[in-house]
Length: 430
Image (cartoon, rainbow, N blue to C red):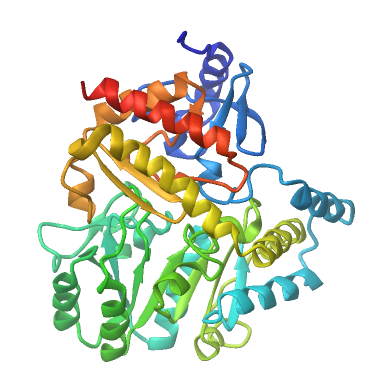
């Protein structure tokens, strides 16, 4: 098959690099890991996305998760247009803020009280501040390979041992900002125990992606999340689930409903805004009452509760609530894709899939943590990515990102994608 043209994308990328760092407004978009020119998009509808060169592709990025209904769902678009006609932003309370807070509490019962913000990063940053204010402790535990946004205190990686002081994982982040961030290994209970034993009265919270989706999709082992619930309770720390990706995507009640583990605080993003820039954090009422103006923990935002974002979010959540079978449909579609890869590549790759989330790791032997993930053959991933892109299938341009399936993906498009996945794997592993 002839390679699709990307002439206009190359032109835009060249112009963008003059005015935007790296030519992109978020690093993964630069396609640096796959050796290609990023596609500049102009439109999307259903499960298709179209670039400036007119290439229409089946989209498995789905704007990194929020496109659970597909792009430009007419029901959501109608509500957004109606909201736009009434004004874009007020900087004042609106009825929709109350409605979405009540809807979140209904669908995610652990979020008795919540606060809207404008991004997942902001939600996580605020939840951690709330946890520190509530517990009057400074330290937090995060897990290597779990991403919680780009706030200074969370851009860290583990040192030579889990007990060492974390060092910044980005230039521009003072070491003092990360000295209270401890890093454990995902799915490794002993690493968590050691940190609590070394800091028994200093840890405010453990924050975790209940399904890690920022080192590729990595599932929790059966007893890992219940263990985190137990050890945080034992030491008087809070448990924070970062459900920016899994919230409303893994199930209507998120990962906490799926795994039957209830956190103290939850952060949301992506789908809760129906694709608009929004996030939320919330939890037990006694904890959330620490937030100003009820309590001493300050957090604010002019665009928080934006009327356009809440209109999109409310409609999206109502659609999901009124169509509970959507999660079964999503699971079945995604499992077909996963099985197609497994059947074609056998044990030469590792495929992790849960609900509508999936990752193909170009490494044998399974992927259960960050160390497993980084053993992947990045050149092989780039080869796979290029093959799929050249055949009008738009995948994540990084080994360490998730693949998302939407309700708009048709059976025909899933079948076509399965055929191409099998062809790609068979060609790569002949």
